[in-house]
Amino acid sequence: MTTADPQITMELRRRYAALIDAMLREDRPDLVRATAELAVGQGVWADPLQRPVDYLPDGSDQPVYDPDDFWFVAHLEASYPAISAEVESVMANGRTGFAPVDEPLLGSGGWEQVVLYEAGRRQEQACALFPATAAAVAQIPEATTFGPGVATLSWLEPGSHVLPHCGRTNAQLRVHLGLRTPPGPVIRVGNERLTWQEGRCIVFDDSFEHEVWHTGTEPRLVLLLDVMYPGLSPAGRVRTLARRATAAEQIAAFLAEHDLDRVETDERGVVMRPAPGTEALVRRYLSETGASAVERRGRALSFAYPGSAAPGQEP
Image (cartoon, rainbow, N blue to C red; front, top):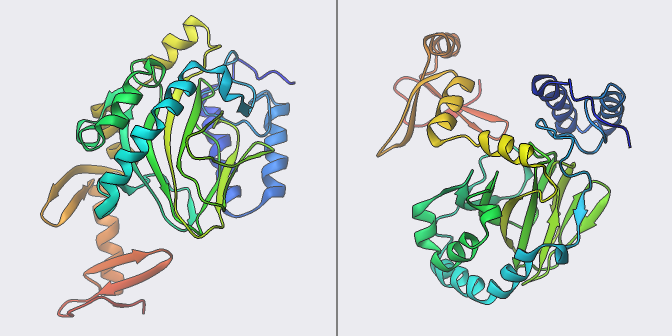
């Protein structure tokens, strides 16, 4: 296998990854393949199907792992009856606590989650809602204290397609415990295809390109958690944990990325105040259409005009 160049920076990998992601969204597998192979030839990555922004030379380098190689798989599978019973009880009157996944990866269908841990931080409201599930996860330090990623309950509707994408780092592995696993959902990781079984785990490296299809008729539900890659060097572990963002750092990054000066919640929901440059741009766009508000649903736009009771259709 070609070795990635240790001098390549995260910024260069980020720009390459953004270009390839645009090609994936445009459904251009020919350009994706050619660009990924070019990147490998230039030492950006070691494998055209493994394209993390944060690439560690001593990190994971295979797409799928044998679950029996990890102690916590037996723990999770033994905890399955309690987790499953709790989740079914909580959801008896609806998907309490679930919210749309906050990543632009859904091509069709519906995808929701409950976040129990994020970057080692326990999410108290969610864990209080699912205490038995949270307790099982809490006994896996690789996913909590030393966890670089998230622990969630992940709900996928029939007819869904999660677009091809690569996770941020090869310093972690992703574990799924099947809770509801009807026929139909399939995940491709690299060139391998996996399906879920209730009460059983799959383990894979999400820094390899992966996507999910659900062609069945019933929702799929899994407990998802990220764990530190066990072969990582001590220095790699320190580096990975040091990059876990605090909640304040995540908010700051969000505001900067979206050019916002303020966000808050009130009885209407979430209110965002853009920075002066973005505010001026929005005002100019609305002024050009004569509208006072615009709403996007998918690719369709509807406009509200002064004095109108409801948004009108795009002129």
